[in-house]
Length: 247
Length: 96
Image (cartoon, rainbow over all chains, first blue to last red; front, side, top):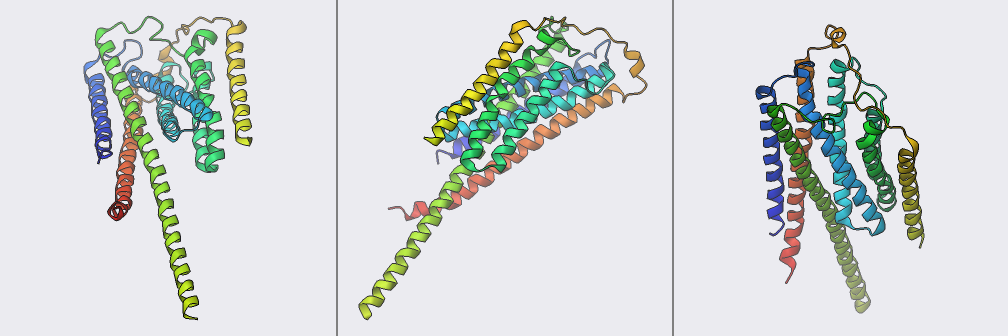
């Protein structure tokens, strides 16, 4: 009974966050002014940056969880780490698709091999590799190798964060480089960031719960099979004893 | 024993890569100007999709990807909970 409350609460939290995000997007599309230089395509910025925040937070959390799980294996930590990796990959895909759509208009190219873009692609491939290893390799070995790979997502996220300051490149730095000047744009931007982070946190919690439930179900099914086998054995032993008694 | 050695090797490997990368970054990487040079956007206006279409594609992709994943996860958790409840029921009845 106690488990039904979080089971209802998490989808509700996810629904509320998603509605908030939709409202923030509607606000961005209809109520914020278009950028003078770039025009309407600049509105991609509102979801691109928030998705990048969500991606970096999820990958750093996945890296921390993987390190903890390597040191002292724990199923809840493992489920949390896997959920963070999945949601991090999801938002990385959003970043890698929304960025080029903006870049085509702004830079005249869908993609350039500049430091931040290349590192983001690397982090995305790393997250995909972690999930592929976890899905394909056996339980214990796959878990350790996947965790070892996931640990690397932490330094990669840090390098993404500092890439423009350290190595330059064409990627703009709006937040660190003076921020957004228009108050209407600023409010809409932070509303979008709040919505995206809310959705990301709710997704991580719900996905971690899904993974834990799947583990519990597998353990319970194994228990059932073992109990059935024990019953069959006992029945066979009883039948054999009966035959001996008759003879 | 084997598992502990493997774990310490993996951690050592990850730590070495992390420290090496961080060291390489901070050692002598020159700081570069953070502002990209201004570009002439007029050349690209004719050959690209309209800005509104590009922004629309980005928003649809976001809502499709995140919404689809959220719906799939919510359905999955419901199905698993139902399976667990179904399995748990008879066992719970059997308990004294």
